Image (tube, rainbow, N blue to C red):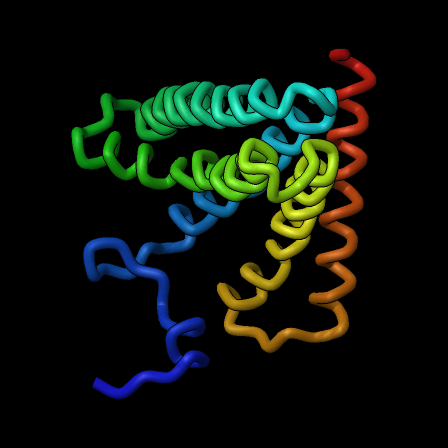
Length: 178
């Protein structure tokens, strides 16, 4: 089977060989943005000498948010459908929330580089924060792909806008909760 990088990036989004559908794509995109914002908010107040605490905070935030988000989405879906969810629907909800967990992977690895002295703790933290802001901004490219649109100037502007809004949300969270 022949393939190239462009084909790989532009293939339809599927689950178990079936097209995912707008609802589930939207749920995964929401989880992706939400997870990245919360991981960033958890990471910012970590002090320089607390890199191990930073890893624990980011992982703990992602895991607790994943559980809470999946539970809340399941309750909401039960209300929308006016019935109990099937086992398959519950499993789908778990899978659709996985982007929350994946939001912690890269920052955790980057923070872990401070343990092996690859980066100073503060440098690792700044890199992890930057990566999360870039991940949030990159959502505009994913949305363009999902709509079958080519990347345009508007896509780039939206990326900067998303990153700016995410940064403002994190700043508000920090001001209101810390």
